[in-house]
Image 1 (cartoon, rainbow, N blue to C red):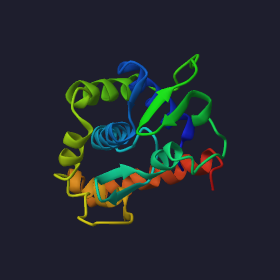
Image 2: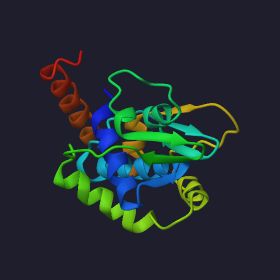
Image 3: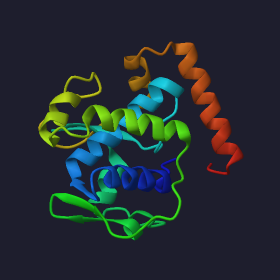
Image 4: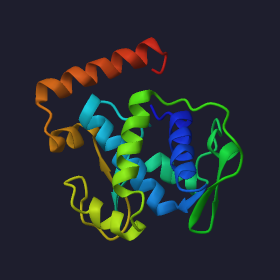
Length: 175
């Protein structure tokens, strides 16, 4: 289940690292990189988003929808972030980040690696990942299982993580 609060807090954190404003394409690429790195290191993403491959590479699809005002359920995002043409900007101060220390470490690692790069450089970078399916329009879903296989997880590890996610969702009442 997509965690809009964590996605908002992660975007807010990244935007603040860049002075409060960033090209939206760059932001969705950074979030994709962070989620992918988190899956690589922990088996779980930060945002629990779903991923799709688009013309400009793979992205976190719900974050993309939030940026484009396509999601307004439990509208945490629009309290703190808004889109202005090709940019996304912080519009109000967040009192406390709901991100773990590990989430912040991964976000910092990715930001240090890619934060100064142009959005189009990040598009080229995402085209190197097996997650990207070359297409010219539309969205092609990328399953987390497929991403985990590409990262190098064994089938056994993937099944264990999927079981843990199912249990967590049951315990949290998300089914």
